[in-house]
Image 1 (cartoon, rainbow, N blue to C red):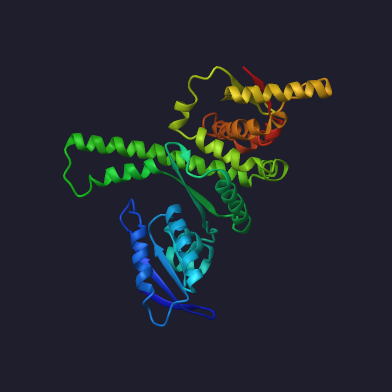
Image 2: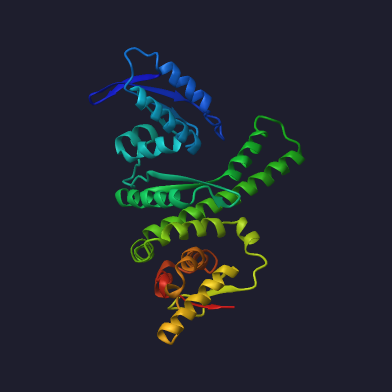
Length: 345
């Protein structure tokens, strides 16, 4: 047992630290957890709670393993087990300014600290959470951003870790020119993934904090945010973007209300097109007119999964590729995502 302490009247509480300091960090295993818990059961006096703290990443299967252990412990009157991965440890630590200053250095210069609010993992261009889990994660992130508006998130691709592991093989060695070239190639590839991760983080924060966009996603279209975030991460993050957008015949072509000459396009599946045609038909029959000319008029699923993610990517492309300013973006009314016009072509 590394540390024994109390939490108010709750005593004793045991803390066991499991260091995984090499990068990329190795994973903690369920066998290691079971061994530590078995050893903790022999501690005198009997523990009221047992924390396992690790520098390894947060791991959903291990958290589920601990949850099942707690169900058995509760039935037997044994202590609660809490597993905290490095992402959660850093997130909690940086929420307290004094703790953050002590362990991560002072913010300095009066600059506001940016606590880590969430770490989301991707693999092969896909976010490794969906459905209810993603919905809850988005709601928690929105609440955390309200409480800590200077907070940030981390999007991490498994491929980045794989590249770092390959780069480690070059450390501490005298390299031939061929090996140096191989290392340069790996570092270039890693930079592309790192840039994509930063782009993903910027896009998510934009959707959830922009004063215009966030109102539409979180209040007007209450169910759109998780689908829009999932669509943005899964379909608009390079290098996967180019591969997924090939071989499409029809596109949703969209323009901001204040600059109809600007345009961005998103590929439409057969299901998307059928949904659009169905809602047009329903409106013709009910109102005598299609009434489907803006993004707000699109079927909910097409708007959330297809239109909004592409608009968000388009806004950032206006800035990075066309060198427009945020003032110009506002003048174009580009953040009024529901008012973008669309056509199919």
